Amino acid sequence: MQNGSFQQEKVVFKLDVFDERIKQRAMKVVCDFPGVTLIDVKEKGKLKVSGEFDKFQMTKKLKKIYKYVDIIALEHDGEPKKNPDPVKKPEPIVKKAPSFRRWKIVS
Image (cartoon, rainbow, N blue to C red; front, side):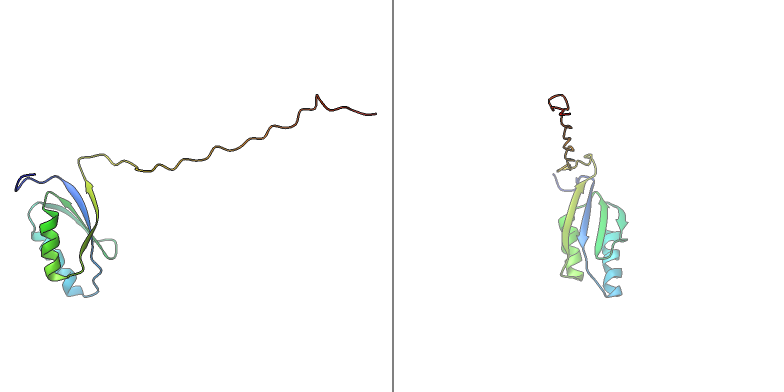
C-alpha cells in the first residue's frame, strides 16, 4: 500500500469506557477521520468502524484520548466472508436389525 491508498475494511476496536465524555471525544475523533464511511457503537465496549482509512493512525489518535484501546477484529470488505472452520455434523450410526433367517425356530 502506498501513502493515501487504503483498502475498504471494517475494524472493531475494544473501547471499554464508562465516562461519557471520553466516549464523545472518541466518536468525534473517528467521525473527523478521513475515509470513514460507517460507525457502529451498538455493542457495549466495541466501536466498529468501516471505510478506507489507516487503522494504525486511528488507533494512535484514540489512544491519546483513552490509553486502553485495541483492535480486536479486522475484516476486508472486498473479500467474501469465509467460514474458516465449518462445523461438520456427524452422520448418525444406523444399526441393522438382526436377520431372522438364521434363527432356528423350535416348536
